[in-house]
Image (tube, rainbow, N blue to C red; front, top):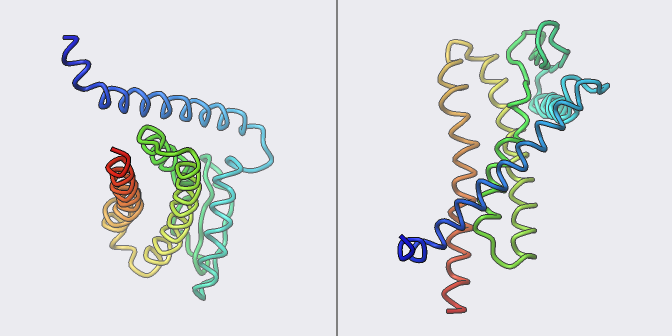
Length: 183
């Protein structure tokens, strides 16, 4: 058993680090959401910000966009040309995806400075791609409402998770090259 633990020490370290970082950040985010219940921003500051930024982005594409608080659930209604097309809920704000991305990068960390800047730039890229995703999804739902399931459950999750996967692969390949240089 000891030989197996020694043989797979780096894999075990990766898994434990990933799970630890993921759990700590998820719990911290949950606490943030719980504290946001009394906030002036509905449903929480980050989701509200994403909804407002998505509205501005849709307007840059030449559509009239509007967001209003949902009366029955913690979300923001997104209207395109006065037509209700989508709800911006907490899961749309990209924080959970960024936590997943960050946990992997920390678990596979390189030099501190490079890791820090990669996490920062990758998080900004994921957030930005998510805003573009929401805007294009909303415009797509406005123009092609019969494609709702395909757009929302297949194409647009593929975009955001595909981006994370590509960022991970870039990081692993770059990090592996650095290990080989120092070996």
